[in-house]
Image (cartoon, rainbow, N blue to C red; front, side, top):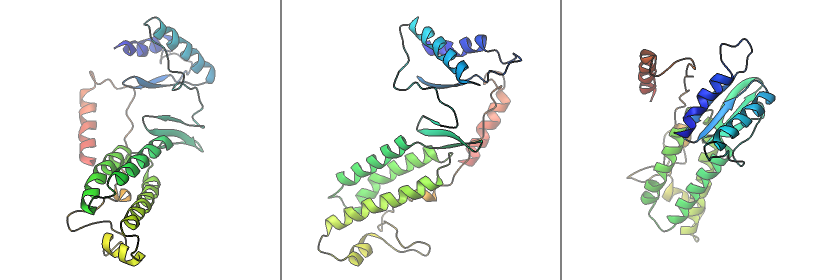
Length: 231
């Protein structure tokens, strides 16, 4: 791919063995990538290099997606927000990712306004499971709790619309079942709605940047086995 040459370009211009600390690293996923640098001046220089590199190949950087920012101000990448708080890097679900998720849940509930409760749960659970699995390795527990509350409010409105003349207690008893540990469980005899805050947070083990997947096979096999054992 065209973008494969960017890493070599950066390595030649900012060699890691140089005594100066450029702190230049490339992280890429498909056509999206981020590049770290020790200073704003280096970042601007890199942007100019990448612009020329792409222009020679008939491509250009996206003005909408390309920014130079300090890590203390944070940035979004692949649905996460990366930002340092008091010197500590925290990775959280981005606001845009949260908004997209809540919109998907809202649309599904609206689509299922005349469905049975069991059918609605079957529709919602894959959406919830996919999003929580994607974000469970980040700092996401408080976000999961907040989204549980938002989903509850959406479902309460869904239930009230179906029975406008019924009292609140009747609606609650019809759609929510009490368990030993929780009062509000949106469930039927067939299935129950996943609760996001029940998802176990699995911290991602940082990858050693000096490891090569073609040369350090043992390291990557051990890492693969460790990731399997925690999922």
